[in-house]
Length: 189
Image 1 (cartoon, rainbow, N blue to C red):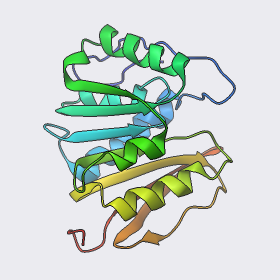
Image 2: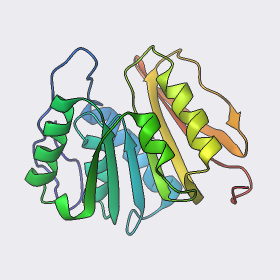
Image 3: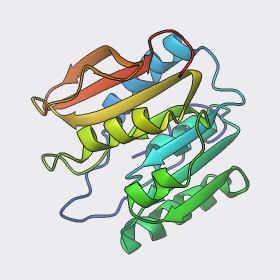
Image 4: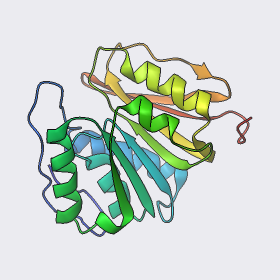
């Protein structure tokens, strides 16, 4: 697993091998960031939340491409060790914060409109992705033009909308589904 583009391009990332850890494959991450580039334009200066961060690859890719800050959340000690190691490898520790907590605790501590890009990539098949979308929408964590990206197993149900947070796109990559959400009116209420 490598960083695809930006200041850390080509750097190898460590991955934690565990039952519930399944890093997003490079080809899917490359497609995801190509789509995000077309939707948000530049990554320069954006704020990122990576829930269920695993290896931290998604947030690290955004930081490498110019994101100003990323909050990486995971509760697994092995994953937290790998996230910190990967941030150090890519010399991105000064623009990231690692939060060792349950996703639900972490979400409660975030302010409305705090993030321009939110990644949700939990273990598949447990209903965690749907719950995280609902909580993110309910707490209105996205900025006015923010994007929420949710990775699930293909066929795992996801809400079409949560308040003004609407599904705007979805893409399938084999057994992986990526769903994109944003605010319907451009301004959360």
